[in-house]
Amino acid sequence: MGRKIPAKKHRGVKDPLVQQARRLQSLKGKINAPPKDPDEQPVPQSLTRLFAFQNRDKTIKKKKDRKLPPNGGINQDGVGLNPVAQLKKLPGESGRGFSLRINSAVRALHNPLGQQDYPDDVESDDTKGERMTAQRERRQRKRRRAGAEGPAAEGGAASRAQRLALKKQAQKEKAAEEAAWSRRAAAQYERVQFGDVAHA
Picture (tube, rainbow, N blue to C red):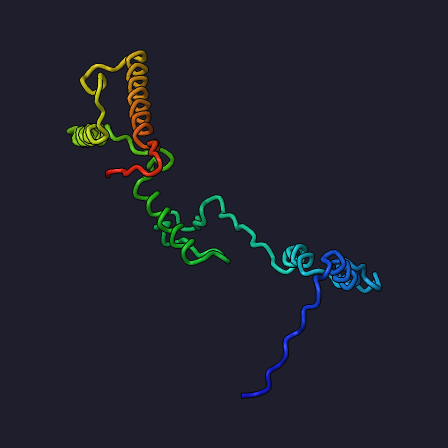
């Protein structure tokens, strides 16, 4: 089996204040101690990380935005020829950017007066009124789904006073429901004398 190692004997109760003073004395030179030589302090990692972005900006050169020529990169030499065929890839332009530029030029050729900044006028294209009727039906379905009940749903627009009355009534109903629920959920206490039998 092996030899039994005797345990340490606990002789008496040690004073905790004396123990704490001894512990603090041993840690005095280790915690919050000033550096022995202030000139040989290492730079903290957090500080180097803080100023790392300045060095990074020096190494990375910012990409310059190359602006297109005023004519969109179209050569004006052959005026009668197809202008899309004369488009050349600009230096430094990505393949995707070049294809997007070609697409926009083709779109401009086919629809020169196309309104790109504003949406198309629905009513001018809609001769039979199909789009507008479909839009009206969608809106009505949306209102029905939302459960719009009241004067606005019956046909007449609700006045401000009617809307406020409806809102107040809904708030009263909600408050009454919450009060009933809190009364029901409140703990009920019953006094029972010692030795009485409670029947469930």
